Length: 253
Ligand code: MN
Image (cartoon, rainbow, N blue to C red; front, side, top):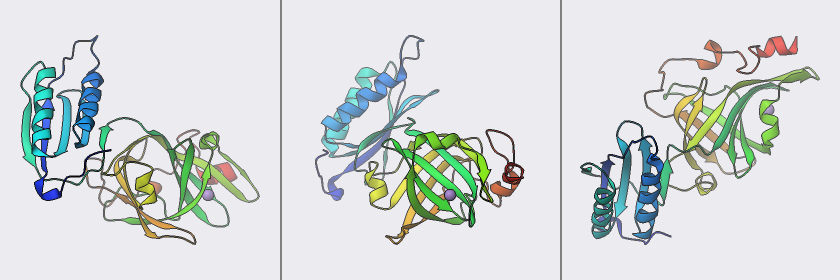
């Protein structure tokens, strides 16, 4: 566990450490070394591989420990490390960023009511939310997401019809966990930030719990980034299954 240092005595930096990009060298070796060193120094933050720049790091904690990590970066990097002071963000872990945490899927589902089932792979199951209006790429739009029972990973590719209803795989891909708190605790605490790499849904999203139980209710919100599409309506613009190319109506016909 990270040492607890009062926020007012903490310091935060962003650093870019050029990595040796020779083909036989994995950039992630430097990333992983930074993470384990940062954890041992009692620091929090993140490190990610950047194809062009090398390894990018956010580190915060006691000033002496931050300096030690910068020295370590300099010792491991083939070229000068660039650092800048940034505000302390309150990270509770030292995490790898840009790393897949597993699958995500969105299934459009006509049951008693029409909705989209939004599912994230967490600890071997698909945590699931029923989103009546479906996800949006517009950061101004907050979509109600009602927590529903976990599903198995095997269900991720299910499409079909019956009993007057139907299911299509509206989007699928992988996701990265983000935010300042480790998963799955972020979900337990009711605020989870993640990055989707789907065919339709891309970039940062947040799930924010607004009601604790009976059943838990959340809001699904697109974060403001390069993948945001203000004013868009992705469920209407891109209605077809990413598996079969069919619409839900065509599956149920
Ligand atoms: Mn459903």
